[in-house]
Image (cartoon, rainbow, N blue to C red; front, side, top):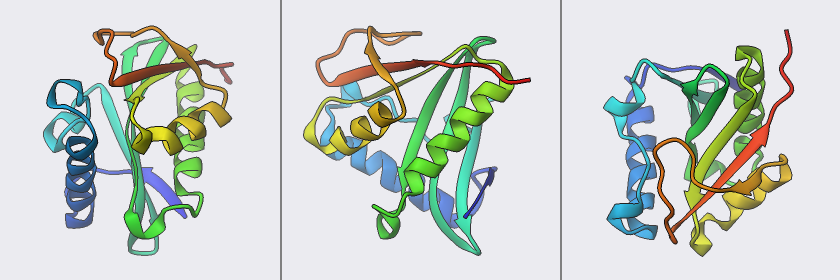
Length: 155
């Protein structure tokens, strides 16, 4: 598996992002969907990564800079055909290493509170993420959980 920065132009990537957004709409009310579309993921404060095995897209994830010491994980998604193969774990590890390399002191995320999001929450918990109050521009929402992790930076 190779994880690399992606420009969101390949058809496979667009399909995966569409799948991600459809999943959010299926499990979350509209006011509680915080997933980003293609254009938002191209923002200057976001670095988007894809995991590939040869020419097959396995999953994706993004790192958004909230400020020089705080990053946010966005758009974590594993392709349906690669669920339960460790893809998300490897992408999350990559994002955390990049966050440390950037010198972030903290990394946070928002995820759904519904049962469909339980595997994601368990993954984040296994990496040491703790539940926290809303951060950045998020507001308290019964459909969302907010999680954060303090990082030790490496130079």
